[in-house]
Length: 426
Ligand code: HAM
Image 1 (cartoon, rainbow, N blue to C red):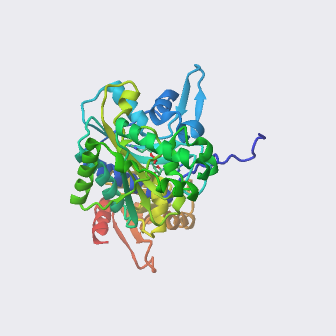
Image 2 (image 1 turned 135 degrees about the vertical axis):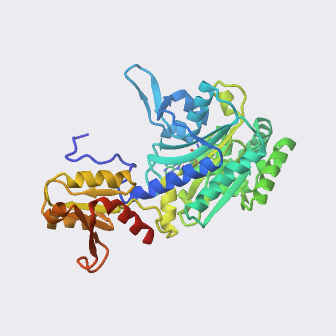
Image 3 (image 1 turned 30 degrees about the vertical axis):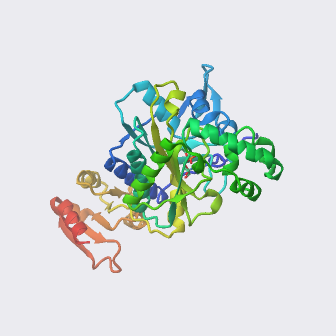
């Protein structure tokens, strides 16, 4: 590749600058708040892991492990992968540190998948999510799903649906896969091009295929939900009842199998009606009762979900939800004296919790006022030679049509309290 004259963010990745970054901050703060309300604590794990964590965790045969992982060898000849998802690393950390159970963790993480970039599908995306390890009580399935639902409601989404299914556990799924194989074998020549050859490797993937040919074949075939063992059926019924009691509506979706091999029992996806069908999942998750063992730990149940931040923001925009979280400046200090008044005043303003900024490089009054206007601040604090001599500051309302009218001088020592009063009166 020739050296570009100007570097760009890599294909399929995005820079997030203000004012868009304020939406990210708002969304993260809301998620952190809701996760805290449900008893989750923040967990941070490395962005890269031994490649085995993912090969064993999400399954070597999964599309993500086979085709989409960013795998590299470091200078010490170790093979790592950038995390394509957030669950396997949390499980690896759980096994390593053996915290008390139930272990309830939330996270915000970038995730890396070498996919074909398009709207809502990126090579680096970001997820907020939770994982619970150490209980298979259906009450926790209900809580995890309710947390996702309440979070989506809290950020202002209204047009989304919860699709739910049960994948059973290893035994009842094994028996079902035998039935599904027989059905697919009988209709193999009717499947889409890809699955005509690949259905044998992972027949469950065919259920996930959106091609009308595969949909036609599988919808006439056996469904896992009709072949659950008594325990898995009772567990699933308890989850559905629990959701019903909380008023969380769900749609049974027997074809929902999701993309990773670790899922067992409850699996779910939230889809946004305002987004294009192919990329309309705003969150997904489920149980993974065998994953801890698979990664070398003692048998431990687990459940969680992850939700794509970029997709949530696209959905908010598509639904026309106005941004409520603002990172606008409150005050801009214009100091033409060239002394240290601005620095001293800003220190007091900021200590009092007032977001404030200034111009630099000894610019003229006119130039500084231009920056103040552009800054988005509501108020300008003017310090000229007169103010300095009188130990006063002029407070000017930048949103008012008549700036000169809407300004007043206050003693320097009263500036902070006056601004706090004006904030209340707003
Ligand atoms: P996932 O369904 O692969 O599950 O991803 C979770 C969410 O991340 C998706 O619903 C979607 O909103 C977003 N997402 C996924 N891939 C992309 C992409 N290429 N570009 C933009 N957004 C994307 C997981 O990752 C599981 N770890 C979830 C989980 C947690 N299961 C149990 N615990």
